[in-house]
Length: 170
Image (cartoon, rainbow, N blue to C red; front, side):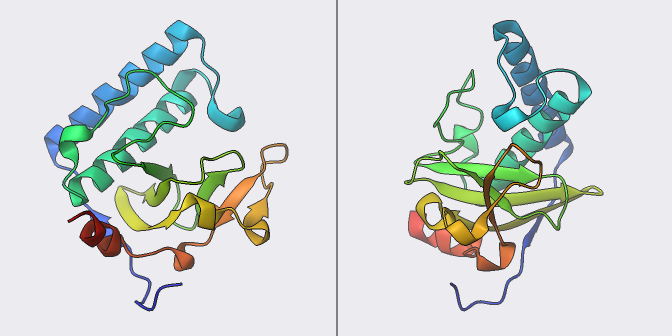
């Protein structure tokens, strides 16, 4: 638990950022459809819902990369690889579509990742904080709200401020 008051960071996309996110989301969608890849943990595989999931993911990754000065490492994976990370050395960005949502950690997540929560709703992007995946895997946070898709749902208020992650990288 951290002692700093919980306060998410606001991220504002520039026009070229928005185009980069759109391009990456469309590339991911096309790649997944070409290889017939399934959506993660029962998520959508094709169509508008799947494209929206790719847009959210790509946008969240850009917001975190920008804050941590890791833009040059954006979108390195050209196809989805189970267990891979979004940003070096071991950062995975978890982007959700509403600000009240908590961070999701999959039951089979690698224990050595840094998970960062980003939420996007009504054109407002918030970067909430981070947690080590092994810390996120607590029985008290295990839930199955979508029924048949259990995961750990980590409350935002328990996340470490992104500033601590940024300072640890320097």
